[in-house]
Length: 119
Image 1: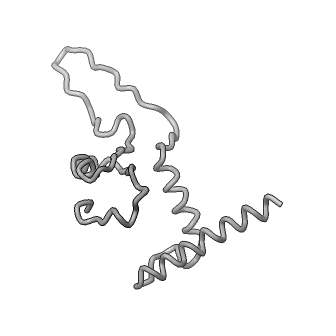
Image 2: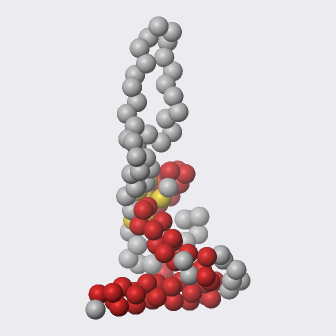
Image 3: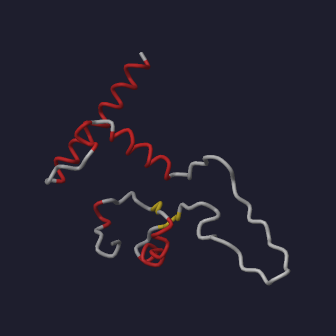
């Protein structure tokens, strides 16, 4: 995935925020000069604790309620805003350039609404 990327197209990209499933790409990213930050919950991967019979079970701290993950929440929120546009709710376009144009139009719509509210 990263190995075939032409990073000259994105000269300002220095850091990648990835989900827990992409944590194995750290070496590949560092060889390309990129910093990879894995965004995950602090208790990811913890399903239970093995203890000997009769031993005391350690308490695993868990946070209650909704806690948005840093940086990932920004991306999820943006996709939700773009999904409110009828043409961006589903990906029916065959040409990626058309999809890109609709994303630009969707973000333009968001910005115009924000400017109209500010006046």
